[in-house]
Image (tube, rainbow, N blue to C red; front, side, top):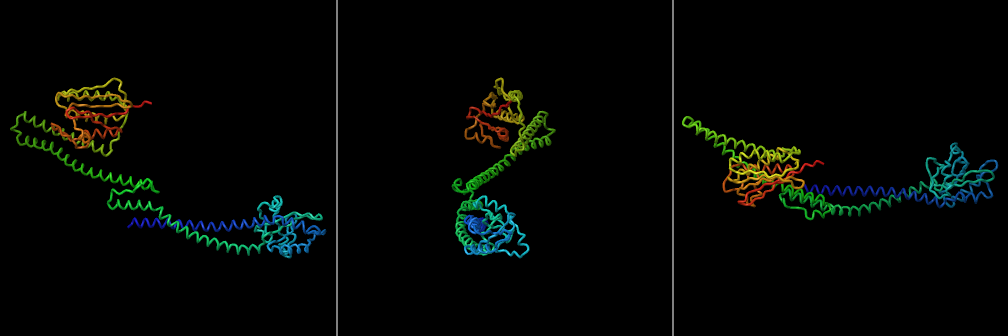
Length: 497
């Protein structure tokens, strides 16, 4: 239920976001249309009437001068000009300017007002307009309101020694007010109607598009819901080919990882039960032996001979050593399993370590009447590893070999360089291991059955495997029934470069 609500919320948000974008785009389009249409109108008007001022001068100032010899403006002439102009276009306003840009006369201005004769038009746009011959879009001052800018036509005149400018506003204030009202109303209606129509169809298409685009997202939500309900094997089909390939494949990988972790947890639970059972058995046996012999010593201390008492104490000591070894292995393996041991790698001579281990195990091998050999050429290079952990791994392999090698048997320790590695091999002449059991011997508390049951907790090889894995390596086993067993692993050569 919550997944459906989440999906619906997402779809609603996408739809609302899409509609908001459309509305914003519609408003922007309407504003841009009004602005560009106005600019287009003004530029067109100015371009069409660019020569109007010069034409006026050429036509009206042939026989008459706008200013007489006394410097008085010919108001009658300007009255005729405005009459003719307004008959053609009521938007036009004609102004007479002196060389400084001051307004000399215009029919549309009240020259009795004190501020009228003080108005001064900026000549820079006028001169620019004249120099470009009216081919550029230029705005000039509006004499009625100097804060406004309008399109214009202008030309310079020189008549009877009197100079100045004819300045014609092509779209007067009254005309523009009426035009803007009508145009803006029309543009608003057109823009609003177009926007609403576009919005409607775009909304329909947008909703369908959002529904289509979220199809793959809904598939991911559905898969997550199936997984939540216990269908751990359900996966998104063709995840790599969907629009949300990254999300879909990540979900499938996540589901696989979770499933694998669940299987591992189940396996660990089984191993935990086995571990508890095996630990209980292995701890109970030496403890029971120690307790039994101690009770016997307490009860029959006077009756026992010195030889019996010595044998009992030896048995108690042996059981204590076995118990101590088991506890040490459990502690060591638990730290390796929890990744609490970090290898302290350094370069060292594996040949010296092999010689020390060979010398230390000679006595134990001799006690069991086993031949112990070390095969190693001169010039073995330095290896880069944790010397204490490597020593521990080799010792465990040696203990394992001594445990399963019969009397008059043979154990060979072989050290040889192979490319960028040095390979260490410990081979015994014991009963061997069947192929189907070789993968199990490195699991904790897994011991293969041999013709003669050996004591031990089954942690030695598991510890070796963990140590080799800490060095980014792997241990190999080569064995056949009745042909002995060989364990080998490699360590990287120390790079002096």
